Length: 153
Image 1 (cartoon, rainbow, N blue to C red):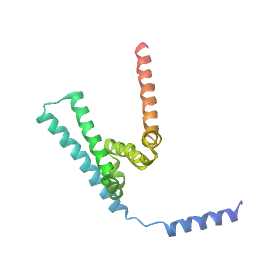
Image 2: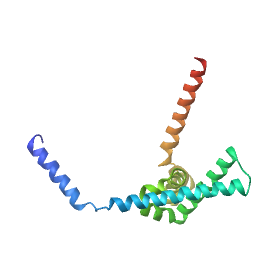
Image 3: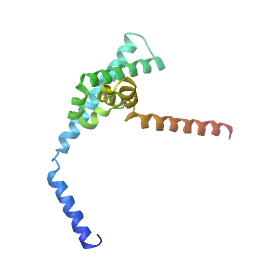
Image 4: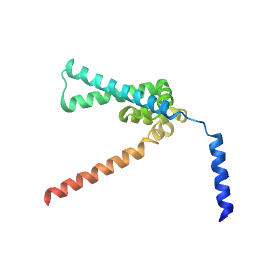
């Protein structure tokens, strides 16, 4: 199809999609994403302060301990099915980096656990997070090489 006929077909298709797509209240959706994402960050900062003032941690140890707790909470809530409800409610606000990443690793593992430990849980665990890990690693190696070579120049 070319010309006027293709244009009419595209317009008819777009009109059909618009008629069956659910209507969203963008302000409400953004508000939920903002406050839930902020609450997750607030929780992470609270964990950080607890590690600073109660346990006396600082530096890399503090960052590692805080990350471990937030990853555990994201994974635990995903395992209980709570994080999926948070994600439905908050949308993008639930994809705060560390808890959202934990959710993206645990969700496929939970979904495919019936296929067994190796072919289900272990193989499907990184379906979503795998490309992020691969390209994050490749990107960090590339940046490291640039800084390394830059040191010689």
